[in-house]
Image (cartoon, rainbow, N blue to C red; front, side):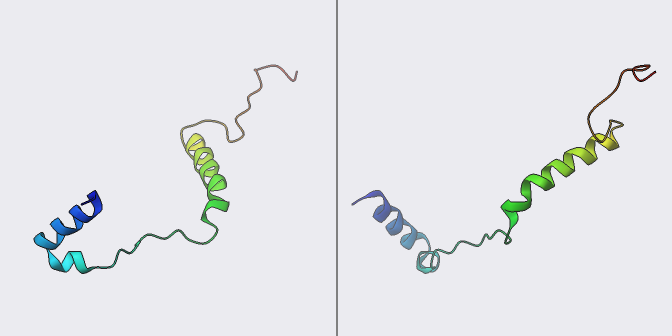
Amino acid sequence: MDNRQQISAELKDISPFLAGLEPVNPYAVPAGYFNTLPFAVMETIRIEKVLQGGSANGYQVPAGYLQ
């Protein structure tokens, strides 16, 4: 008996109800999720940096550089 059949037989012994359920994937990803994910991550990083007192663009000019 292979491993899958053994597990199935054990499950039938423990709970015939659970053994009879069809396997279903309950998870789903919204349409376009992975297309917008990189932008959402970068925006979150930018907002966190600004809230912590950093610059929004990430660049700094030394004091007196433009004089």
